[in-house]
Length: 64
Ligand code: SF4
Image 1 (tube, rainbow, N blue to C red):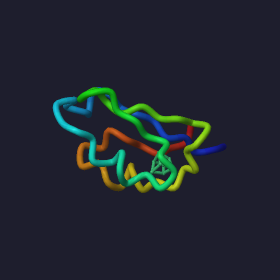
Image 2: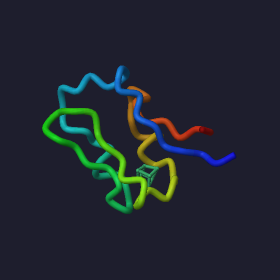
Image 3: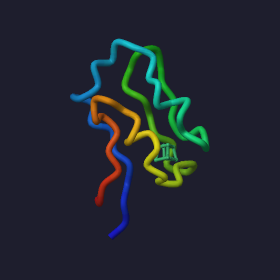
């Protein structure tokens, strides 16, 4: 089984600029205004940096 990054939207308060967007080394995260970030799966290398960084656990790298 492969791991996949997921966004748990209910954990994200969606009221701030997502700090995890800048943490991603490959620019796989993007954010529209204060919405929960979006993942570009064609870029994500599943490094887990963003999931370790998000204090709300809204980004989770887990088995599908
Ligand atoms: S798991 Fe790594 S590569 Fe994928 S979106 Fe998060 S920081 Fe970027």
